[in-house]
Length: 344
Image (cartoon, rainbow, N blue to C red; front, top):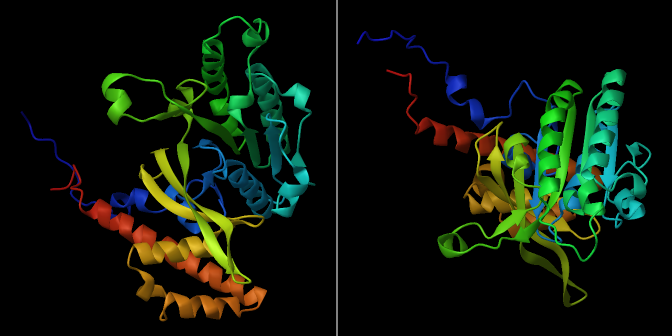
């Protein structure tokens, strides 16, 4: 067999393509440096992202952070927040940074089924495309949506939810290209459910799933799974109080960066994601502390607490930038150990 001649010059930047954010994509900041790195740069425009998690793991908070950062990054961008659980507190969201004056909400009775979702998303895509601006569309959450077939079913009649899964697959199939053309990021929030299985899968397989069928596994560029770890406690007036929670995030599917990357981030009650603390934890866990900070953590925290707000945020941005670069360097080392299939 004749040997195929290949160019033996390999561009190093191509070899490390997945170590840094894709320069051809625009990203919405997630609000946390280590989470951005896990995702491959943040939430990407023109793509679909799925946030899946247990209760109280910050799914809605991530959506609020995305809205706040999108408004800051895209001054003319359009934000569509579709809440289907009838539990959204606008005042609370505003206190966490959501730009309520920029967000387009919808009446609850107009967003009940998958069919409503499809029609509303098509309208949002058309509106954003006509204005030639970027867009962010959030569904919170997919589990709260029904479908027309289920609504016609009596309460005492059995249903397996198959119609909803089929309609969801159809919706994503029809709108995926339109979302891309409109420079829109579609974020769908899902609640985890216990998987009912038998045999080997029950013992060693994944024990959690989500509703809506498997279409999201195919069409989403990012599937981020969240799970709680432990509470963050601090001493206040001599008594230890819960002031936050630490969340584990694993990107089980990623079509724009290396998959199965994971991180831990801290949510502070009433404040949102604590990116600085999350970055400091990462530096300690990966033995990178000394490369960025020249004092112990206790001394450093005391120094930071004494800073003015302006100096604090400048320092937080410095640490986040350093962590982002160190993360990319680690990914390059991972890729460097892989033999390029076309390299002599």
